Amino acid sequence: MIPPHGSETLHPLFVYDVQRHHELQREAQGLPSVLLSSAAAANAVMLGAGYFNPLRGYMDAADALSVADGMHTTGGLFWPVPILNLTDEVTTIHGTRRVALRDPNVEGRPVLAIQDIEAIETLTEEQLAFITQQVFRTQDPKHPGVATFRSLGRHCLSGPIEVLNFSYFQQDFPDTFRTAVEIRNEMQERGWRTVVAFQTRNPMHRAHEELCKMARGAVHADGVLIHMLLGQLKAGDIPASVRAAVDLG
Image (tube, rainbow, N blue to C red; front, side, top):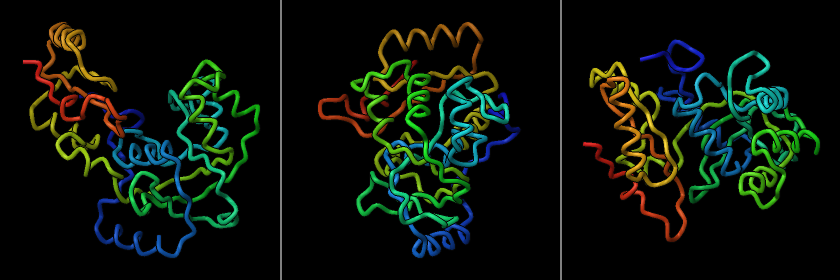
C-alpha cells in the first residue's frame, strides 16, 4: 500500500492512551467550552480517526483561504477543502488557550475533544464569500452546502485537538464504523497490496458495483474497499443496514 497522505505513518488524533484519556476528561470539566457545529464535530471525528492525516487540528484563516484558493495550505500541503471550526460563541473563551469542544449530536452534549487555541480570527464577509464561491462554485443561499457553511459563524478557532470519542458513529454503526488505522490494518492482515477503493454517500447500485469490478480487474487488485459515508439519515432514506449490505461476489 502507498503511505498515508502527507506522512509515512498515520497520525490519528484520538487519544488511545488510557491515562492521558482520563486526564483530559478530568481537565475538560474545568475548561471553558464551545458547542461545536455539526460540521465541526464531523471534522473532529475525521481528525480523530486519522482520515484527515496529517492535519493536527482546525485550520487558521490563512490556511483556509489558501486551500480555497489553490487547494494547498500555506505550507504547501495538498488539501481540497478548508477544515474549520467556525462559531459565534467566543464571548466566554477570549483570552483562554484551551477549550473543551462539545458534541451537538449526542444527548447531554458530552466533550468530543479538547483544543489548544492558537488563534481566534474573525473572517470578513469578503473572506467568507470567497471560500463559499471556491468550494461550492456558487453563492446561492438555497444551495445546501452554502446554507450550512454560512450559518456556522464567522469566528475561526484554529489549533490542534485531542479527540476523546467518535460521537455517535461507533454506537449507531458498530458493524461498519472503522478508523483509518483499522482499515489499513485489516488490509495488511488480508495481505492486500493493490486495492481499489470506492466511496459513496448514496446507496450503492448496480452501476457502482460494475465499476468496482471493472476497476478491480483492470489493475488486478487484491480486493475492493467500499467506503460508505453513513450519518444522520432523514425520514424515508434507505436504512443504513441496507446501504451497508454490499456483496461484490
